[in-house]
Length: 99
Picture: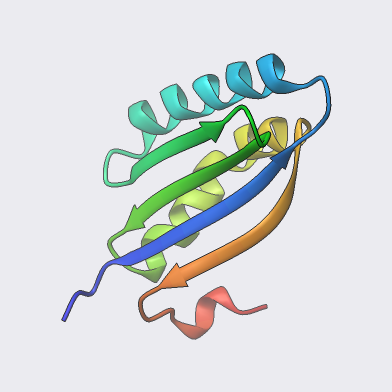
């Protein structure tokens, strides 16, 4: 049984914002690679449907909380160019993630 947590976020890219979205994602990914080395993350962009999916693999719930704290500013920038559609989570989350 895996103890990892897999999170898949689906976004709808705003009309006319594809290039800005891509640039913001690149900046966010560069920051995460330099500052959150335990996180495995990849963004998949479907230009035809103007949807994107971020796949994140966390070691545990504490890793998610640390990621949110580290990357909050960058995620705010990314969210300027898209709207969230769906979040799928595979794995066991701790109570600390529930507000």
